[in-house]
Structures are given as structure tokens and as C-alpha cells.
Image (cartoon, rainbow over all chains, first blue to last red):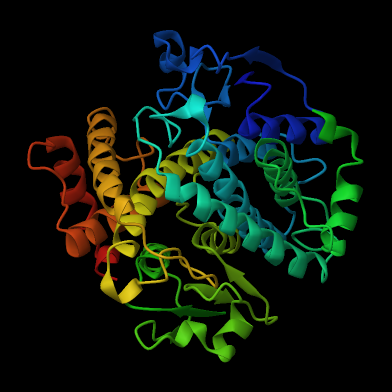
Length: 210
Length: 210
């Protein structure tokens, strides 16, 4: 197996943290997003969607999309489950991971992609060009504020996002928050004490430095 | 188990088709979206995200989000797998289902929600109000055109979206296409012969009338 990824890509970081948590090692191939390597013919042959990360299996086939990559790795490395163990755990974690993705991660990405001067004409990741829409930056900031509010409600009732165990939902939320903090200066509001307690706890895990 | 859903909701239809394919029966509780029942206190107690569908388990806990609901049902009803059987199949189907969701289903929903007069102030589903952004209607039409183009490329090389077997990726794509056709008059372009062959074939399945 080989993982194509970029050190600055939040989606790549989700997979790197997952691999570190599971203790899985594999060849890692850097893709130079700043230099536009994802749009090269060579990379398009690996992942026609022209995004990272992408996992290339030993038979040469490519798995794209973070949840699909993680599903493959979890099926082949079931120890220390991060997608849950029982049917109910799997469903609850899938539900929360999706909320962290759609309400957190996607909101942050939309805000960054519609505002960054280096991403003009590329407001949506992938092979098709889309112009930036400035109203999405302003809306994105409100979406992130709502995300932080909802996160606080959740973490006041449970130690981890999906309940009583660390899971991929926590990974996705941390990556979204760190990207919002670094790219938009939108960190967890100081008064959100449950979120801060959770953030300090989960980011002390060695995997989070990946 | 009890499924809260609405007959006019495309996300509910994804679950209804899945249930019909698997031969799973359960209590179905209609939620009156036109009358705003999803915003009632009674429904918020079932699903605080205030969206349908939601699956309530026998222990009273709620699973929201279509992929999480389907994951639960697939784990508890493994016969006739629609999420794949081997680790690789599971990953390939997860990858394609996600593309159908993000590039097809989400593009159609965004276009409809930002243009429909009855959805003013509710451009994003869920508990938080967001104003419509007219530019997203125009962008959405281009996203759907790109989706149809990419779908044609894919279906010229494989009989089903995820390869050689019918899967949830086909369900999500059909629901997105039917909603684009009905709500936006954007059906599969006449020249997309591979897509039309696939569409005619999959929509002849009895499950598709649900």
C-alpha cells in the first residue's frame, strides 16, 4: 500500500492521525499541492479527482475519499477500532463523524477556499473550476460559530464526540478546528469549557502531532 | 426500530429504496416537512438536527444521517450486501457513494435550497437558519452539468457506479438525478447513452418505486 498525501492538506492529516493511532506504517508519497502536482497527468492517472489523499492498494487500484480510505484500513486492521465495534457503535460513530465533517470540516474548507487568494477559480476541490463567492466566506464564519456552539452542547454531555470512546469523529473535529484556527484565526471560543477540556485531552495524544 | 421520514424527502427515499432492496420492514412514522413538523419540540427530542430521516432503535437511541442509518441496517442485515463484501469492495463502494453524494446529491440539494421560495432562510438543512445565495443556484446548475459529464465517463467503463454490482452508490445517484429532474428540470442529457442505459436498467428494479 502507498499513501499519496500532502503535509499541508487537512484531509491528508485525518489519515495520518488515523494511521498513527492504529500503528499502521506504509509508504508515503508527497504530492506538491502548492506546485499544482495534483493536476499533473501522472497524478490524474492515480486519482482522476485530482485531490489528496489517495490510497493505492497492492493490486494497483486507488481508493480516494478519506472515509473510504479509513474504511479499508479499519476492515484490514480491526484492532483498536476507531469506527466502532458493535453495529450500534458503528452507526453512532458514523453519524457523529458525518456531522463533524459537514458542519465543521466542510464549513472551514468552504470558508478558506472561497477567500484565499491562491485558490481563485478553485473554490471547490476537484477537477472542475469554480469561482470564489465572497458571500460564502461570511456565511462560513457563521457556520463555524454554529459548529462551535453545537460542539460545546455535545461535549458538555459526553467525554468524546461519539460518546465514551475516542473515534474518527474526534480526529475529524480536531483537524477542522486546527485548520480554522490556523487559516482563519477562528479557534474554540474561550467560554466553551467543555470543548476546551476535550480539545486539550485529545490533542495530548501522540498521534495528533502527525 | 422505527423510521421517521417524509415521502417528499430525497434523503428519506435513499433509505426507503435500501429497505426495499434488502426486504427489511419496520414501522414508518411520517414527518410533515411542509407543515414544519421537523422544527417541533417533539421531533427535536428525537433528532436535534431537525432533519429526516432518523432511525430510532429499540433501546430508544436515534441514528441520524443516511449513511449511518444504512451502516446500522447493513451490519444487522448482512444478506444481499449493498455496501460491499470484501474490504476492497467496501472501500470502493464507500468512495463512489461519497462522490455521488458530494458531486451529485449535494449539488442538487444546494441548487434547490438556494432557489426555492418556500426555503427562504433555510438554505442549509438543520437547526440554523441561513439566507439563500442566488449565485449558488447558478453555480449549482454548473455543478450538476459536471456531475452528469463525470457520470457518463464512469458508466462508459462500468455497468454500475461502483463497478460490477448494484450498490448504495447507485441508489444515491438515482435519487439525486430524479430530484434534479423533478425539481430543476435537469435530467440526464440525451447524448449520455451510457448513463441512460444504466438509469433505465437500475430504475426498473421494484425498489425504485419507493
